[in-house]
Amino acid sequence: MSNQHAQSSMNGYTKGFIGSLVLTIIPFYFAATKMLPHAVTLVILFACAIVQVVVHLVYFLHMDRSEKGQWNLLSLVFTGIVVFILIAGSLWIMWNLNHNMMM
Image (cartoon, rainbow, N blue to C red; front, side):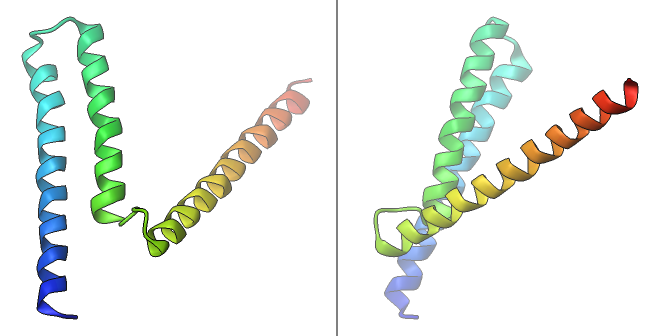
């Protein structure tokens, strides 16, 4: 690994860390101070959470428009599908067991 590549990689991780830190402090501040109505605080919390997921995907999991980033994205989508199938199948089986056992 070249020194320039290591430096650019470190810059990306630093930007991601600072972004994650800011996106954690903002909702924590609004939740702790209760200076805004509950509904507005929830909107801020969910907005920061969504942006933080994007920051993690881009800076730490390297989901970009490069060819390698597209393969990473495909792997993430496949993992999401498998997790969805496992959770949905488990819930379906448990619901049917509950329905059949309760008679």
